[in-house]
Length: 296
Image 1: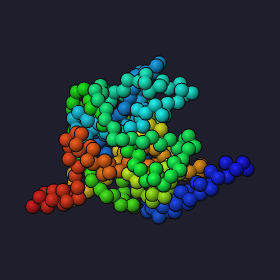
Image 2: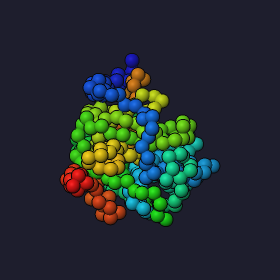
Image 3: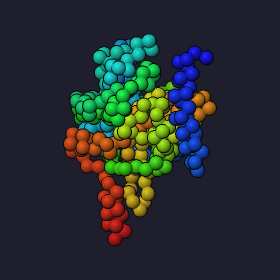
Image 4: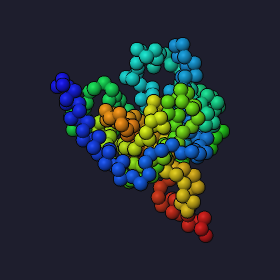
């Protein structure tokens, strides 16, 4: 066996074991929900460019009538892959569709501004790894805000300020596989698992890891920017609360299970999001106060 392949297997052994142990602890394995929640605030990111028109490329979250939150890497030339026939980022004109669980049917909105938060690209596919501990401690900041040309009519999502503990039940909403699959919004019910399971995806301090459903329900290509939500509990809050957005997978080199997903923790970017958009995150005390008022 070549030395490089041997080193790669050794590097993946720890995260793979940590992930397998985390899955074994779950009472319910990750799975696609039969009836996804109503989430008109889930947005689809598309582009026109080259010989492609209205091409689906990722997911976003409507957090205010004129603001959509998604992943910064969708707009980075670092991830250009000309060998796939995809046009370079410089030739793409992006737009957003909001308000419908089916791809290509939501209302189309032009983007007039895009604001990042010191994004640091991470591309596990390149085979490169950050060498210094100092770099490993830096945030990925794979978040960007899109300002729409016209306000969306759908009600925006609410964002939850953490911390969100390991073992917390969450759901991820997106279009895994894009139009090649069902083309209808999919909800994967899952849990936050150990940070160690994301090491093979160069997980950062502003990110957490969630267990992935097995194929074909797995969160795969087309889930970048997909919201990770805390499902509603009647005694605490009336609607899902968004805690993060999916950034990428953590490849484990194991065909028997799907790779875990790495999620940007929005709490770590709360100041940037609130200052830019004017929205306010909900906190645990906010939810408690709301529950008391509703009970009274």
